[in-house]
Amino acid sequence: MKKYLVEFIGTFFLVFTVGSCVISPGAGSLAPLAIGASLMVMVYAGGHVSGGHYNPAVTLAVWLRGRFEARDLLPYWFAQIAAAAVAAWAVHFFKLPGAVGELPIGVKAALLAEFLFTFALAWVVLNSATAKGTSGNSFYGLAIGMTVMTGAFAVGPVSGGAFNPAVATGITLMGLAAWNHYWVYLVGDLAGAAAAAVAYRLVNGND
Image (cartoon, rainbow, N blue to C red; front, side):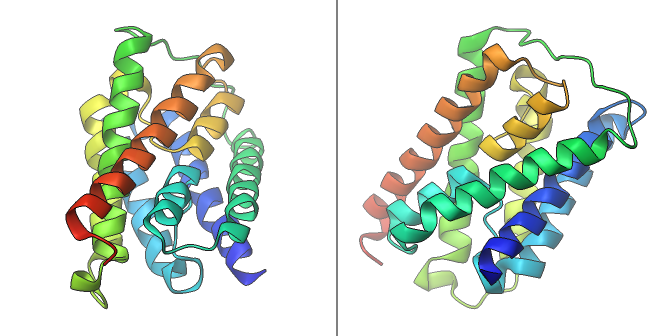
């Protein structure tokens, strides 16, 4: 139960930061920095208890990599999505409803953007937080947070920069993304995470 609570808390603050920074008046061009920092500190805070996933796609990747119990998969997903919904509700106490963001280059570009940077995120998580070669390091939280920051700067304007089905749930509930684009995040993010797990096992074997 402790690890589910930690996943809820970490995901809540990540999604709450996204809404608070993106909905006007927000952090403007510095929003990706704040979002990446939020993820970083939450990973450091809860990583020793739950692994600090805060993302259903990361949970999928860690499970496929073989470092996660199948029985915890659905409870983690439930805690993460529930936290995103509560965070979206909490943001409305501080912000007016967000303006629905368009996909300026289209669905294909958004799908590719979500796939690529979710792959990058899961790849960094697996290599910095689960690999024997980096076991016991103190940089994993920074690496993970910086990956999300980088992706948000690089392709945020293309897809919204979720890289996380929980974040996608939150921004959709906040009115920052359209429900008819929700599948883009689910497919792109879960596929990117699965591809990262396959790539990790090709490079590292069973580790």
